[in-house]
Length: 517
Image (cartoon, rainbow, N blue to C red; front, side, top):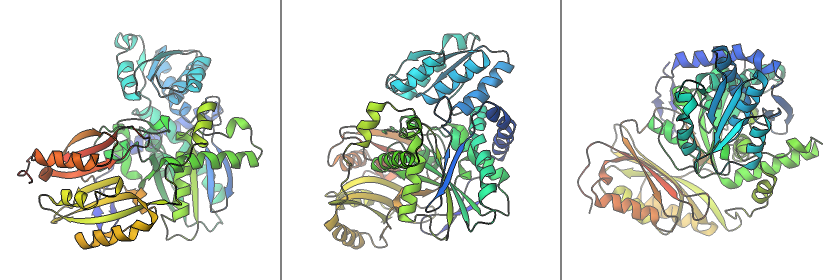
């Protein structure tokens, strides 16, 4: 299937084909797995439709307090049918708890590798279901590498189950999509909704791959338009960078949403990623706000305190919906039905209190975030000229890409700037880079999923010290090596936490241009 999408400037571009075979396989397998999910009491709980058309799809109201149990049970059941007894995985916590619970249900053993930073509440839950926990690695990806080398798996005495890059796991998560569809059939007919927008968190991509495949295959033609929005913490951009490059690319995740803290997405997600309409980046403060709002809402509804607190990853979809509603990011529809998937509630009480009571990172009374689309000419030194022009302003994020078949490139840049300085910055950019424009509020957070722009480049990841001028110094250093002229793609994000490393992902072409003086 070749689809036509529109980029952020209204130009039509042709996107790469979706892997129809995998999408169909995931959708069909999700249909087969739905009875297994329902028979074990793992169904989604749907809220009423709140003001503004928001409906919460809570996939965490089960013994593991997370949606991951679906894919875990599906894969464990498959392993048992195949004659295996020992299940091995790596997990930030929720998939491990799901696999431990599934093993307990099916009379199997489970061995769960978790990073040393895994929350205690998740470790306790895994052990409570009778699984063995092995702490290893400072990050999830280090932990994953160790789990893959498990001795019993290597000897054929156990089976390794990937937490997200696995067809059966993704299809298990896809059953959420089928339940969303069933619920939509009860509320859409006779309503005035003209679009149904589903917000999903993205970590490694198993959830969104399964749900998008299931929904796209079965969505009725008579229904309002379906839109799927994947939501990520802006400081854990593995899924966005992968869709821009067309392959998994390593990043440095830095997020309170530990369930989505992966350095690289899975190929399963990438194969069907174009079934997703948008990837939306939300800032740290907005995730925390969603955690607070959900707690106050559930307390007002007299819900059990067990279900009032969301972990960071569990609140991602709600954060995305809140930002979209506040800024009317997907306008044009008179009345959308927004369905936000709540995905996890396993958070240490002390950590939750610390997060939701902390001071906001950016005080809107004195500073604001402002995005710009800046047009740069394709000539040596132009990107460096742009960075020197704005060196006195704090860049929060930047994505640069060459435009195909043109002599221009585009920089989408977001500044954290004093409220009274925005107009001066706008005038400076308009003077130095004609054709540039100020983005509407929140517009910089949304990326249309389409054709990869960096597929022909080789990637390089650079970690930067968090200090003023470090990004400019980095680009100047690249230019002195003679490589800047070959850069066709550049992605920068400042760290979410003070003192942490910022990151730059660079797409180099194969033939460097002359040194820039």
